[in-house]
Image (cartoon, rainbow, N blue to C red):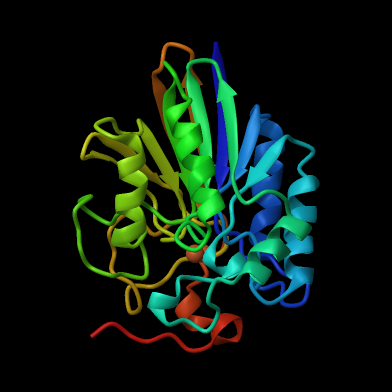
Length: 273
Ligand SMILES: [Fe+2]
Ligand SMILES: [Fe+2]
């Protein structure tokens, strides 16, 4: 028994400013042709859902238009980001509630043969004790199933004990809280988005897959290159015996927008030194 899951990420959709909507249409077609059992969107569904109901509703409608079973997790552009990072849109209860009202739950648990899939809100993890309690319960109750986590931010950029506070991965404190929920065990897989780079590696005993974005990349002038800066989506195969395979669906025909060259989306970017 194999369960196929398509992971899409970072579509940054908006009716008001449809800068990246054109990239989603071919991906929608590819997903309809692939007919996965489930589509999981790992966040930044919307261009600016953190301040716009309309962007979130528009993103949700685009996912409904797939005609496939789907779930989505919020990204920083959907619900805001950790206050420690000093961005313009801190996570607030209002923002989290807006996602729930316009898109759906902030997290999920889905059992499939051999596996428990846990969708985690990497944005509200620190600020939302009820969310942490639900995730701890889902981890503790997995029994013999292997655990795959889906979330917007990767758990780390390199090692699990990295102490740096960095915009791209989960911050050290929530990372520690999450790992503590596993005790001596580890999740088998963590599939994330946010970095807009494709990467597939095993580190610290965890398969860590970074889905590429659909909407755009962040050029080398503005972001270090850790994985591959390309656009596409990921097909996961979960087997009942606990094994897993993942395959990149690179979509080279999509325009490779560089967000650093499109200040009308989020304003001018700061160049790396
Ligand atoms: Fe993004
Ligand atoms: Fe993001």
